[in-house]
Length: 327
Image 1 (cartoon, rainbow, N blue to C red):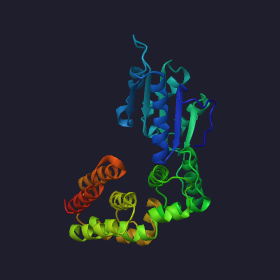
Image 2 (cartoon, rainbow, N blue to C red):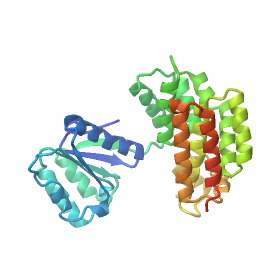
Image 3 (cartoon, helix red, strand yellow):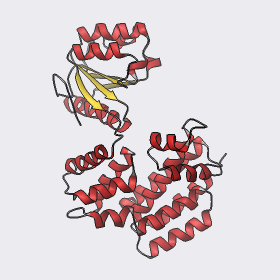
Image 4 (cartoon, helix red, strand yellow):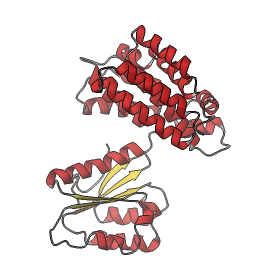
């Protein structure tokens, strides 16, 4: 993760995470929290949205404690803080409190730029969390994930993974973790093809397409066939998760936007935008949440949490199909 700061310690008095890539922002926060709790298991963590940080709130949270407890104060979307609250934060930057780590998440644009400039001038530790819009950036991200996991992956395998999964960093990171856990030895393009392209795409994603459109009986039939011919179960759970997430992404996108614009914003090819729009009928926000929980349970079962992972997958397929008709 690229950084440009006066200190690289996660326990620096102030950390600013700058950018709009949610996965990287969450990792920046987690790194600080883990470091703080490693230093003091009783660290108090306060994770706040802009509306929860009013004038005086920061002073209250950072006031000295009789017990001198370590505290991490996280402020998300700091660019949206009110002008008076920004004054409070700027004042704090000049005299941070010992044993307290302040983490500011900032989108990095023109809005709230004076706060960002003040944090940099004060010597805050900075973590760059930019959106990865270029394929080369996503390829570098995948390579970095495998290095962090201590695994070797060929350049062709990394490229194949990016080609198969697109621009969603969470999905790419999840796939790297899954492959690292499931595969012994070097991860090559044949491994990626077995999990995420070729036969797996022709079956796991077909199961997902049937499930998200409410065709439970057909999805179960296709699932049983996929299992019978030896499709990797993690690849099937991944396909189910991808299908539900795509619906959730498109449901939250601006209405009336052109497929080409949505494709760029959501990291999907235009043809997939059209297909997911057709699949969205009958879905609600609660339905998406229910379906994602079902997939998470199936994924845990597939990775050793159940004596009958095939049955767990069947339950997930039925739950997804029902959720698609919950509206």
